[in-house]
Length: 183
Image (cartoon, rainbow, N blue to C red; front, side):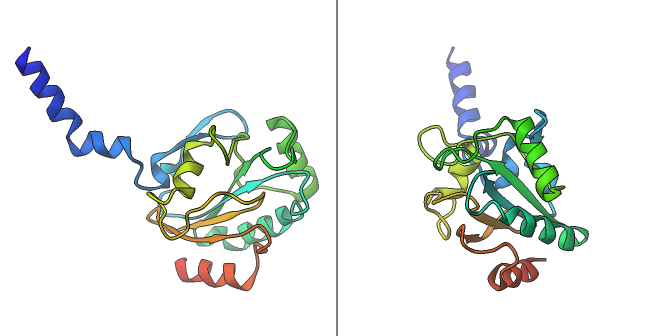
């Protein structure tokens, strides 16, 4: 019995156990894409990532067009946008995943990856967004998501390098400056 307890203590104090308990980068998360498949964000290692919470019935919905243009312009340099629909702000994303995908494709020609609808605020916040907004894991850019179309810029090593409010356009000078620095 003593051997089992010592072995268990060694395991839970090992770096492996500690690492799995506290995510260190966005690569530590698995999320569900809009088609229902689980996707490890590890598959985006080595790319510059923009993570955006999106909605189809928001005053900022037009930003889908700018996001798609940005994605097409920089994709060949290792840039990807990951869109996470959320219904957290005035129920501005009421559709199903299938309806959201159709809306984005038909109205904005979206080709960047979209994911299943998640919570980006509150008690049921998705673990990825808890990581992105927590002061413990993101001291420089922490704080609650304020509205749809908040944007996080992640470098090729999975580090959060910038955060942009909803009103900041995807192709704004400040976004492009940071994106070009990271690329």
